[in-house]
Image 1 (cartoon, one colour):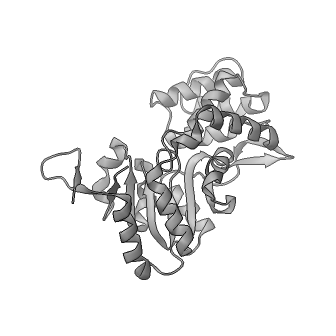
Image 2: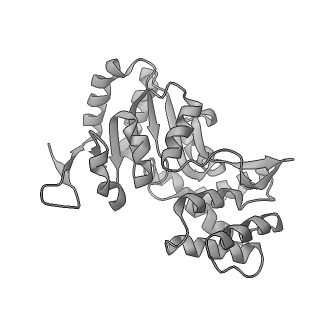
Length: 270
């Protein structure tokens, strides 16, 4: 069986590289041991599709200077907490925080949460319009990974529930996975609070990052019987460890660096 070398080289472990058909055979073989109600859990960005719809949306948000005064105080407090120079109003502070994130001077977990609640002041219906325009502009439908479509079809045919756990804002993930037939109640993502129909400048649910992904999955799927999990980032590692069949999809170098900590990790050839 082909393998993908671990970046450490030498005697470091290798990751078996498998085709979609190989993964399907494993799912069928493991399903009995996992239980009839065992689920498939997917990260979204970089896994179900190439690219990152949360980043796409936030960059469009900044490009259009769409930050509103309702977000300013929380953005300023966030910048001060992480030593990010922040002058001006909501747009300037949000831009400074994003630049710090890109430069790895602002932690990913806080940045991904901020990218959800920074839409403070927006109504949910107008936000849906922006999301749809960004997904269309970025050609989202064409970025969905074909190698995963037979796996999703297998899940539907066999009655295996499919969950998506993402660190992107819930309001973009819901619309991005809708063409795949994944219901909103089976999604866990960064969820801002909503008050009187408008986004508030804070999360309304715990963050879905790292170990938080597993906790979020357990909240919407208390059995936490995971037949297979699919991810591309190091912060998907905890989610991958819950599965009988953990699968790396176009893995980042940081995920490859922690591959040895995920028993049985496979690499989907896509």
